[in-house]
Length: 178
Ligand code: FES
Image (cartoon, rainbow, N blue to C red; front, side):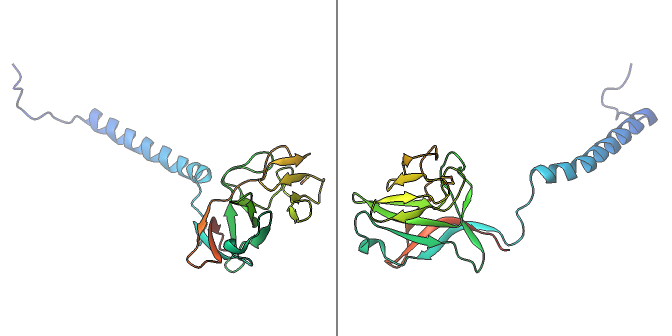
């Protein structure tokens, strides 16, 4: 009768089996790594997401109702804003290189500058109180909704908060670093 407490002997067959299994696992991992890096690339060096401080030409507390102030993403270092929502040509997570702070019926909103049709930069039409796209004629109300197509959906919002100074806002964005 075999002694249950006796240590099990590792046979040559067991050893070779484990050795082959380890070798195959290492080979598979080595082969898969370049593919995984392709699907989950590391962010390029120098890129950093976070709030970007913007000094507005007109502080929010001096904006008249129906007025808007344009701002651009900093160039040094090269940065962009991140859309919070969107549709059409825009989407949450897409980049914008400019935006508008608008005061409309007492409410302050911040929009990406990109038209939701094909991404051209919209401009404020102060007289009509609209944002107009020069490319194909889309028009947006000051609340970002579509007044006239072909833009299919409203302008994208940018996430923001008041900055430390009255004339500053902080807009969610990314330092691109190139
Ligand atoms: S890109 Fe604005 S209407 Fe086409």
